[in-house]
Image (cartoon, helix red, strand yellow):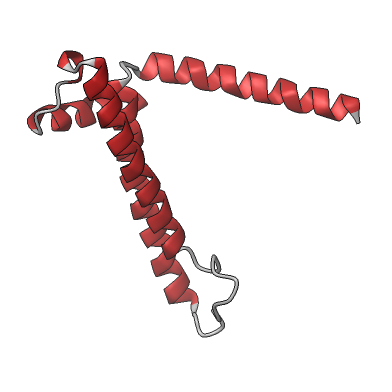
Length: 122
């Protein structure tokens, strides 16, 4: 499977929900991105809430291996939920797998170059 598979699947689902991205005005796109951005953040927060040891004040000493495995699985489920909303944002922005991958690679290169510069400056 590729990223495009996920994007195509999510687009079909969104179309069944009545969201035709190509027909949205810029104002509708902005509202959609805002809403799904909030949903994305909520799913990430839900993932954090499932994460063992994320609360510095909580006593996790009673947790056993089964508890940790269950929480890890719940974190994965929330991460997938967040992924859905990120894909929706890519789609409303008119991005496809090729553009996402190109921009991702460019970002990695620019981030790596910034880190090299910082290392050289110290």
